[in-house]
Image 1 (tube, one colour):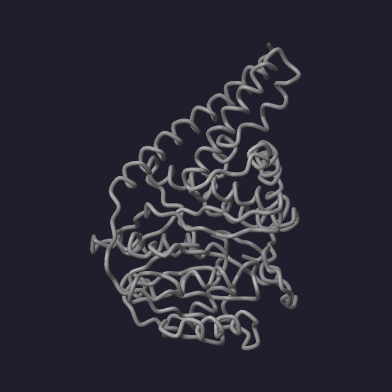
Image 2 (tube, helix red, strand yellow):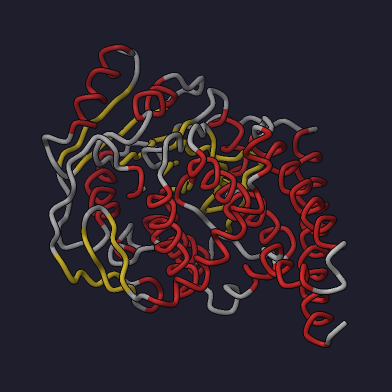
Length: 389
């Protein structure tokens, strides 16, 4: 066996070993919290910026109208008064007349981030002391609010955030995206919080105490960055508030994605992760060791390759089942190695460009994910904006 093959085997084995350790930590944490269900009272304002008709948007939004928790205020907004998502919200408000709903039109065009520009318009309409920032592709369970609010029992906690899982896949690219999201923004983000005390906050389920948000000047510090969720959490922590991971995942829905959609978002998010935590970005390769087993097929270590693949697939499939509440379909489990190869290539591809496209606009992506508009391409008006979320 050559020295190169030996070194590669050590790297792959270390990656699998770390994956097993992370798996054990997350399973133990999950089992502990599931034995201790907790709910808490509290009034919540939910801010939902919208832009176009994302796939399955009506069901996603309806899940917020059907929450069991009370009181809840739903604050929806879009930059364009003719945005079709607003017409959908108005129909849902008529269907659920008992809900406290506000609809806000407009945004601050000086904000480089289109999402934050809308959030700045929504915030003055929030009446409650606890605020949830929630994207349009999120689907919530009826009892999620009370379970998350338990994290604010400590008055020193300024933000509670949720790990993210992808659900609802019908196409193969959607399954790849959902399983990748569940792994990196769900499983590995929980492991990072528990093992490394590093909070990888995703804006799909980001809950804030209004006092903490006011202490950092609202959204002023994130209006020109791409990773507004992560940077907002860092600002809250720097202001002396605690961050807490909720034992309740947030579900995002991807159903009929294309390979192009998956590639575009991965390149954008990978570029942001690389700029936010340059020291952590290489660790993504360690936790994605399967593609590195391919060269071993041509060596005397070839019999080990299927064993390593089976172990990694079994660990990831079991974790996806645990966090999502149901197992991936068998064909989707079988393509988990393809998913790993797809995102392995994307990891390197993120170094080839310093621009990102978001909501039809192109930006230079600078240090700390600062967005600098370089083109004013008109946003695409279409039924499907799945690549923009």
